[in-house]
Amino acid sequence: MMSNKEQAAAITERYITPDNHAVSDYFATLSELIQHRKTARNEDDKAFWQAEVNVVYTLLEDELLTNTALPVSEVKFGTSGWRGILGKDIFLTSVATVTCAILNLYKEGKENPHIFNALGNIDFATMQQRGCVLGFDNRFGGNLLALAVANVLTANKVKVFYAGESTTGALSASVLQHQAAFSINLTPSHNPMQYGGFKFNAADAGPAAAILTDTITTTARQYLAAGTNPYLPATIYLQTPLAELTGIETEDALRSWQQLVRQNENQHGIAYSRLLADFAAREDVVVCVDPVHGASRDYISRLLGDPPPERLVLLRNTPDPTFDGIAPEPSSANMQPVLAALNAQQAPLKIGAIIDPDGDRIRFTDGDVEISMNQFGAMAYHFIHEVKHKKGMVAKTVATSNLANGIATQLGEEIFEPRVGFKEFKPVMGKALVFFEESDGISIIGHTPEKDAFIGLILAIDMVLTLGISLGQYLRRIEDTFGYYYPDRDGIVVGQSGQQLLDTLQQLEKYQRNENIMIGGHPKRIEQVIDIDGRKMILEDGSWIMIRPSGTEPKVRFYVEARDAQETALLTKSAHSMLAEIGLLP
Image (tube, rainbow, N blue to C red):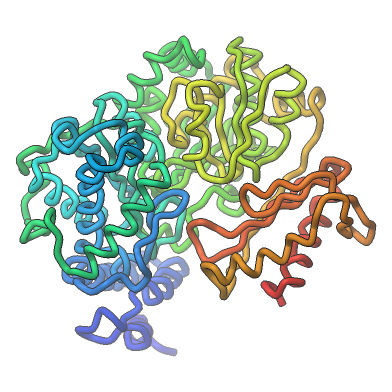
C-alpha cells in the first residue's frame, strides 16, 4: 500500500509539469488531494493532505501573478458577469485589463449617449470623484486580484471604497449609500472552486445593462490582444497593503446594507431594528445558516444582532476556498447538513438556509419542507402585499414558477415576467414589491437591484416571527388559497456552444401553439409559447416545459412545472426526450 507521500507524489506527477503553468492542471490536482483530506483517518493525515493542498495553491498563486498570456477562453460577460478558470482565464493581468475596459466606458460615454445613459449620465471626471466599491468572495487569490484592480483604479485617480471579502448584496448597498459610480465584485457566484469571476455594476447598483457588458467585452479583448492600453499602469502588482494606497477608503459593506434597509422601511415594511429585538426575545425560534465557507460567513451573526449560539447555528463558516470539494450552490444535496442540524434542535419554530459564496442566492427549509425560490419568492410577495399591506406588482423571470402569477392575479395586481437575468428587472425597479428568479435570487422594493441572500433571510425570519408559524405552514396556507405548483429544473453539459448551439435549439420551434407534446404517454396540447428566452411551452392544464442555453456555462438548462405532483418527473422526462431528439442527449 502506498504511503501518503507516495500517493501525493503520484497525483502531482499526473497533473503538474514543473515550471509550466500553461499545461499544469492545478484544480484536477486539488480535487484529488481534497478527497484524500476528506477521508483522512486521523488529524495527522488530514494535516498532511492540507499541506499538499497548500503547496498547489502556492503554484496557483504564482500563475495568478505571472500569467501574461491571453485567457484560454475569451473574455465574455454573461447574464451575471464574466467567469473563467482561475489562473488560466482569471489572473492579475486579465482582471486589470478588464478594469481598464471599464474605465474606457466613461470615455466612450462622452460620444455615445446610450452608453452615457446606462452609466447613469456620469462622465469620466465625475466617475473618478464618486469612485468604485471593490470587493471579492472567498475564492483563492481574491485579495491579489482586488489589489490589481485597485492599482489600476488608483493609478487613474479613481476613488476606491474597499470592502474586502464581501457579499454581492452588501456591495450593491454600498454603491447606493456612497453614491459611487460603479462596483467591481470579484466572484463567479455559485460556480465550483476552479472558477473566478468579475461582476460590474454601474451607478444604479444593479447588474450592468447589455450595452455596457457588450462594450466591456469587446474593448477588453482588444486590449488583451494588444498587450497594453492607455489606462494600464506599468506595474499592476505592488506589494503594498491596499489600505496604504492613495485614494483607498475602507468600507463596511454590511453597515451600508443595514442603513439602506432601515431608511427604506416605509417602502417594504420591514422594521429591521424591531425585528432584531423580537428575534432576541423569542426563545422559540432557532435559525441555522450554512454559508458553505463563502463570503457571508463573517456577516450572518452581525446581520442578526449577534444572537447566542443556541439561537443561531452556523455551519461551514470557516475559510476554505476549496468548499471541501463540493459545488457550493444552494441545492437539495447541499441542504442536508442544515436539515441534520435543525433536527437536533428542540425549538418549535426552525428556519434553515444555505447561501452561495457571494451571498446572492439562498434556499430555505423549516426542518421538514425544503423551500426553493420558486416558492419563497411568491411567499415574500404575499407577505409584503397582504401582511405588510404594500400594494404593487410582482416580477419574476419566465423560468420561474407560476405560483406568484396565481397570487398576483387573484389579488388584482400586474405581473412582470422577463427573460432570465436580474438585469431584466430594471424596467420595474421601484414598482415591483418583489423581484426574484428560480435560481434562488431575490430582492424587494426599496432595496438593492441586485439579488441578495441577506434580505431573503430577514424576510424569512420576519414571516415566522410575525405569523407564528413555520415557513412550510405558511407555504401550505398560500397554496391552499392560490393553487399548487410543482417546479423542477436541471442542466446538461453539451459539446456545442455559441451559434452552433443556438442553431440546434432552433429545431424546437416545431413545438408550436396547438401542437401536442407526449407527457407520460399521453398527448397534451400546447396552449401558449413564450420565446423571449429559449422556448417555454405552456400546456393546456397550466403545466409547462422551458428549454434555454445557459448564459454562464457550457450547458443547456431546462425547467418544468406541473400542477400535479406526480407529473413533474414526467415533464422532466419529456424535456430530456426533446433534447435527445435534436441531438443534444444520447
